[in-house]
Every structure is written in structure tokens, then in C-alpha cells.
Length: 473
Image (cartoon, helix red, strand yellow):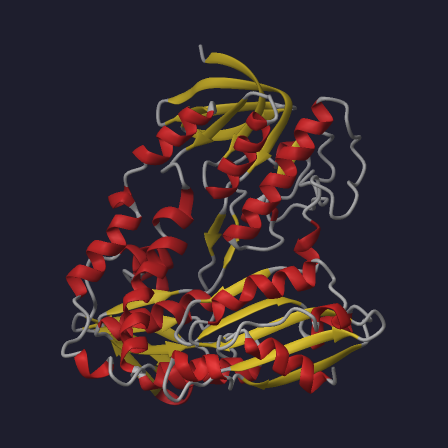
């Protein structure tokens, strides 16, 4: 017979979003239990954000040094691949979650290892290979923070190939001599550049354009840099089949073109990981859930929440943590009778309002693309009357940052309210400009007030003044 437990909140998934949800309810005085089948800390800590950015950073630093006269003359070698991997491994704690487990326990959160399945209202069964070993009842809420899973294309021959997913590429201990990358999104583009700078001959194949959801002027800078790193880019084309031949992976493109590599990386997107959780028995679709801004799942009563990638709104770690904080605050407030179960007020502690209008995102290639808010096209689809102001990043701060600096900036303004609703920056080091833009969009700062935010001289932030001046202020 399975052991049984009772707690206030059960959180399924101990990744970044799950940890934040559990941490917020415990901070508010409730009890919480995390259920995790893999490593505590989740994909971002071990197979995604942290290791992939750790692979990218050494190459970016080396390129940055070579872009500054007086420093480039001191560079006599190339990247030390073994040292890059050792540093990357340190960020994953060598795939050991002891440190994360320690934080969970010190925070006062319970931890149960195993596979979770919802067995009824506020009820979760946890099993291992031997079967169900624990049944947990939640007094207030169950939170799904199960992350996402890769989506592989229906490509002829793929099932018979030993290929990499993004997790494999981010955690590999060796550099393939030739790497084929299928997918031109953020993950595919970042990893293509990382491995090119580590010494691979990289070919990237994208069904559509490179980084399709970002402004073309920004993407053109990234494409130019990838090509300079030796990446061969094939856009607006689909692989027709893959097969192995003489120890190599061969990809056939339309028109009889063939690409060969020693390893194939498939980076064609992700979906919420909701399979096997028992959602069908609740009348819910495991292909995707509808949630309000507090994370409350529609059609499941007032006890089931979904946050992070599991909610399917914005598949970004920082946004998942934000959703989890809002959900945790809402759960605690509802448990105490402080708020009801209706839609929470926008911009309150219980609502992830920014999901719809102020999502910051960075492509950590070199150059970087940093974007927040709405593009002109997205704003138009919402019926917002906008103007677009864009220009090269050419200020004293960028000239000091690198010789021959190339960058681009864009501001999107709601003309009826005279507030910015979107910004994009492209260029080396621009990710550090993003939070100021996020504050401007989230705070709906009027342009005539933003004009008084004087950028320090000489910094890259002078581009803010240039955008406002070109706009007409």
C-alpha cells in the first residue's frame, strides 16, 4: 500500500518555475512539496540556458578582445576547448543537483523523487519503476511546472539516426568535426555559433528564415557574423531525408543537394510537457492548457495551476519564474481568503500581466539580439496605431566598445498614448540595454518623461537619446 501525505500545495516539477512557485507559497506561510523525476533545478540549469550560454561566452569574449586595438595584439591563440567544457561543466555542477536540493530543504520545501500523476481533485500519485509509492493530497492547489519537451520533425530517416537534441549539444564533452544543425530558431542559431567557434564545420538548415520572429535588420547582423565564423546557412529550405553513410550523417535537401556531418543537431522547437500527468481524466487536453494570468487552469475547478513552459504562453525561463511567483502569491492569497478566484487585477502581485505585452528575450549570439514588447506587426494585429523609429547604433559608447562596431536599434511607439510598446537592440553587448527598455515598456513611461532619462556619456545607452531625437523629441 502506498504511503500518503497531506500538504497545502503540490508542485509537479522542480525546475526554475517549480522552485519559484513552491518558494513563494512557503514564504507566505503555506507548506509545499516539490515532485521531481530528474534533477532538481530542471532543464535550464543542466541542459539549456546555463550550459549553452557558458559555451557561447568564451567565444564572445575572444571576439570582443580581437575587436579592440591594443588588446587584439595580445591574442596569440584560439579557444581552449577542454577549458571551455570544464567551465561549462562547473555551471551545471557536473550534473549533480546536491546544491539545489540543499536550497530546497533550507527553504522549508518538501521534496519527493518520482513520476507524478494527478489521480483526482487535489490528489497526486508519485511512482517509480516499482509502481505507486506515495499519494499526496493538497489542501489548496496542485501546480504543473513540468517544463517542455523537444518537438522533432517528421523527417524521413530521423528515427534511425543517433542525433543530438539541444540538451545533448549543450552537455556534450566533445566537438564534432562537422555539425549539421536543423532549425534556425534561437537554440539552433546559438549552438551553431558556439560549435563553429569551438572548431566545428557547421551547416545550418532552416525551414523558414533565420530567427524568423525577430526584425530583419537585427537578424542580418547575426547572419553576417555566423557566416564570418564559417557557418553555412541554408534558409527557406526543408530537409527531405537523413541517412547514415560510411559513418557520416547525410542530409538531403531539395534539388538533390547533400550535406554531410559527423553529428546532426535537431533544434526544431519545443512543446509543453503535459503527457502522462492524468489530465485526460480531468477532461483537459494534454496538448495544451488555457490559464488565466494567475496560472489557474480553465476547466479544472479552483485548484489546478500551470506555470512556465507547461502553461505554454512564453517558453522562456525568466518568464516562467515570473508566472510562478504570481501563481504562488495568488495561491497563498486565495488560501487566506484575501482574494477570490476571478481574474486577478492586471499588474497586481497575482497576475503575470507582462506575458502579453512586455516579454524580454535575448538571442545570445555574437552579436546579440535583445527585444522586449511588441513589434510593429504585432502591435498592428492588436489594433494599436504605432510608429517605428530605427537607426544604427553609432554612439561614442559603441565606438569605445569595439573598433568598427555594428549595431541596430528600434523603438515602437503607441501614438495614441505616446508611450513605447517595444524595443529591439542588436549588436555586441546589447543584452545589458534590455532591462531599461523592459522598465520603459512595463511602466508605460510617456516619451516626454523618458526624454529626461539622460544616458551617461560615453556609454552605449546613448542610443536611447538618438532614438528619441530621431523620433522628434
